[in-house]
Image 1 (cartoon, rainbow over the protein chains, first blue to last red):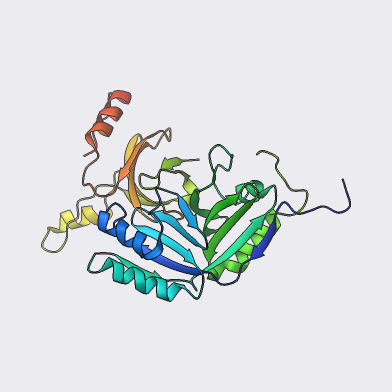
Image 2 (image 1 turned 135 degrees about the horizontal axis):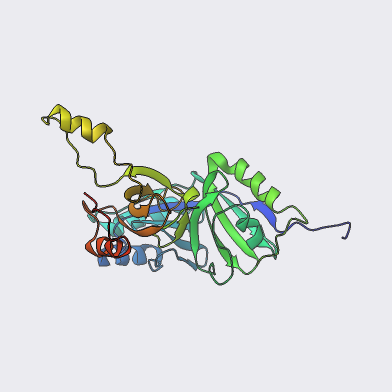
Amino acid sequence: MSDVMAPLATVTALPAQGMITIRGNLKDAGFIAAVKSASGLDVPAQRQIVTQKELALAWMSPDELLLLCGYEDAPALTNAMTEAFGDQFAMAVVVSDARAVFDLEGPKVRDVLGKLAPVDMAPGSFGHGEIRRTRLAQVAAAFWLTCDDSARLVCFRSVAQYAEDLLKTSAKPGTEVGYF
Amino acid sequence: MLILECPYCGVKADETELHGGGEAHLKRYGPGSSDADFEGYLFHRKNPKGVHFERWRHVNGCGKWFHAARCTATLEVFGTYPAQVTAPPKALINKIKKKRPDWEGWT
């Protein structure tokens, strides 16, 4: 073994990220059109996340989406969304300060997540463009792969320190499982 | 380990991602009902050894409630279905009857 070992992935807490929770009937044509007109993004299919420049739209549940944007842009984007919804039974709310965001980068990023969450991280079963809401040891979290060796993870801000410690422990040098 | 497929997310979620909600398809007896009915609604549960219908919540995922049919003795899962029903789907009942011919039915 070499003296200097690199962690499986570097864990970085990202600065405040704009987040908007959108709720409504994801199958409704009016809803889909309103989301498209306000954000420029298509409503993602089940468990998918779509990205375009600095915006990302994630499927959270059959009636909930999460729009990721710049922190400063969130209020304006939410107003545009609310206007686009008109009198539809749907709403958009700024929740930027509710969650913390982490970036994981390294060739063993699947190992780091696979050790903490009850998710099959094999490349054939968890791929790009998929977001998974799950459990990270004792807390709820959601993550998606941004490329082959990096992932992004969101969890509630109240458990951010716990999640960061957890990820860093899981990424300790020499602890790879080597399964993926 | 119990693995149930969430009918909303389509993920095969393991038990630790879910929260159990007890027996499914209870009939609620509220104000105006007899004491015996109310007592039954509050306290009496089936606890069978065999086919059981349960409520589960995908608590660390989409957060939705759903129903599951499983065997309490073997942990075999017969199927899961959404929560917006008052009785198990016909297809699922037929499937269970085929696998367990001496099953008495869900009511």
